[in-house]
Image 1 (cartoon, rainbow, N blue to C red):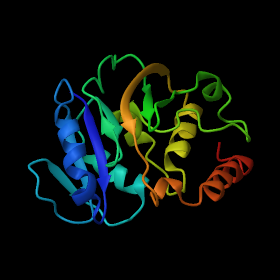
Image 2: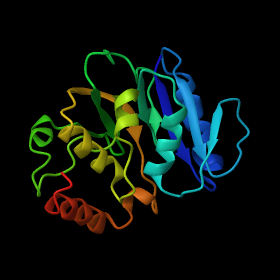
Image 3: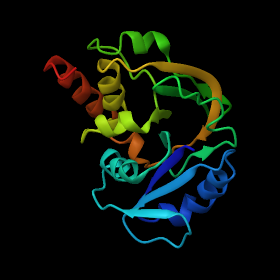
Length: 201
């Protein structure tokens, strides 16, 4: 069994929760579903209360109680497909997911950027979502930084984690206007590069 974790704050549950939950419960293999929220929610699925307002720290709270072999963190405004965990093989530490985006585009995990991820000017190699062995996420929790996912990939890259780059889109990626993912992007990228310069990675 695997686990899918989502973080839901404020009115996001009312706006996106039903759509996300309908998609998550249709995933083949019936993964464990964990919702991290800043308030109680009316759902039969496990809800972990966390009020940090930081996506990475909230995800850590969900990962701490997860029981799946692999854990994937899915944003509440995304739509996971039924084959979300298909082919998660138990061999690789990370399965990097491709995704569909609005307008008919696609984003893919990048093996070339992963190889040079620790270079100062290298970009985010896995971009958004992946499935990662739970034991590895417990050893390397999300950091309290702007691009928490990018920092995680760098921690895992430095630790020598193995990656399978899967080019089959696993979900629809949606970022509405005002989404936290779009705020201060330049400053958050520079924070990562400064941490590289300081020898964190």
